[in-house]
Length: 261
Ligand code: CO8
Image 1 (cartoon, rainbow, N blue to C red):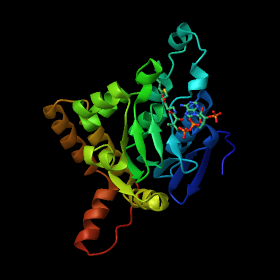
Image 2 (image 1 turned 60 degrees about the vertical axis):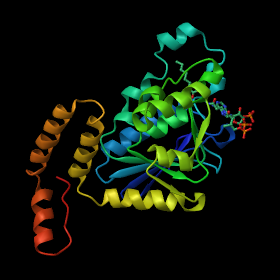
Image 3 (image 1 turned 30 degrees about the vertical axis):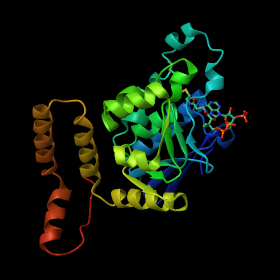
């Protein structure tokens, strides 16, 4: 257990479990949460014993109900510009960590909460989860990637509908739309997320990072560039000890003994 004030961090074997811990504010994301998350993800990235992370929210009601409105309500506009408000979410290790991590969404994922979940490599949702970009109802718009990541995840029609009406999408619609990879009953959410994280943690580490990078790049390159990158990264992986071990183990019909390099 860590000494953070707004999040809980715990290592379970090779999986780092990070829990947003402001249940009284539905885990709203303020600057303190951001600072602690950056720190926790940097520690996760730096620790060779940690192979995958899970991010969830405390309480049964919310993953995160958005950026903290109370922190923004009286903030002068020039200060949003001068401190480049929300930029930390894009440039830091939360959205750019090279190791895989999963968002386990246990309730409301609204505004910044939905945007944070979408920074994960994939989302596993409880059947009670609700996703939305309701910023328009506050006179603003998504500021932490919602207009970009949601559109890439669910397409223009759904993204426009969500951003312009501010309506919520339930877990079933989110799965149907491609926003989440799995939906499970709330009481089985953490078991499912930890099982998925443990499966990933048991994979050869370098291959896991490369697989993540390849899929991420699909959103940022032309098909031709992406296919070239995929081939090159594949070729690089063939130089790893784990490629030799993985293929040998298959041929010899035994479990592989991964080296992580
Ligand atoms: N920020 C701060 N506090 C919050 C937030 C929030 N986003 N969400 C909930 N809370 C607090 C409530 O104020 C309340 O606290 P208190 O008891 O002290 O009044 C407590 O959490 C419980 O919330 P409710 O009583 O409202 O609970 P309900 O069950 O009635 O409703 C909802 C739950 C529907 C989730 C409701 O709380 C809600 O609508 N929350 C706000 C959702 C929202 O609008 N999120 C988007 C925020 S803006 C954002 O994320 C990005 C902004 C980008 C701006 C870009 C500028 C550059």
